[in-house]
Length: 126
Image (cartoon, rainbow, N blue to C red; front, side, top):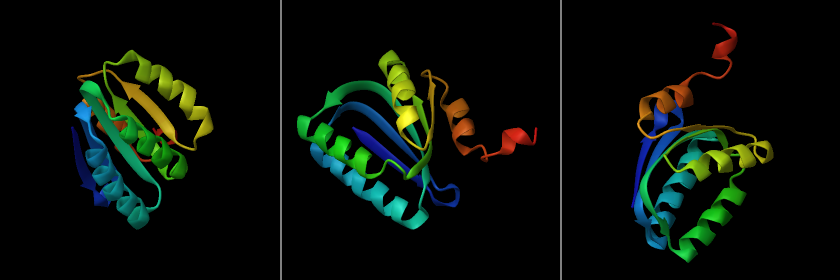
């Protein structure tokens, strides 16, 4: 299951992923996200993943194609999950994309949200 929330004033979205993701669900969410990217250019994404049971093979293929099409459309991505392979995936993927990626353990949604929405370059000011 996917839930999707836009924060237009922050050029950010939150996507919550749980249970099994169908191709129809993925495609609907991808269309919304593509429209959001068209409105804002580079965007920030918070993915909250819990009780994930996988996705349809076709949905996985659509996800891969979507990701490749939009490699440069994300400025920051925060992933919240207890799935340890996602932390490794984040570390492996980051050098190939022009996007800051950070992994947060389950239960740290607010910390992830704070990191995601922190202004770029603000750390230089503190």
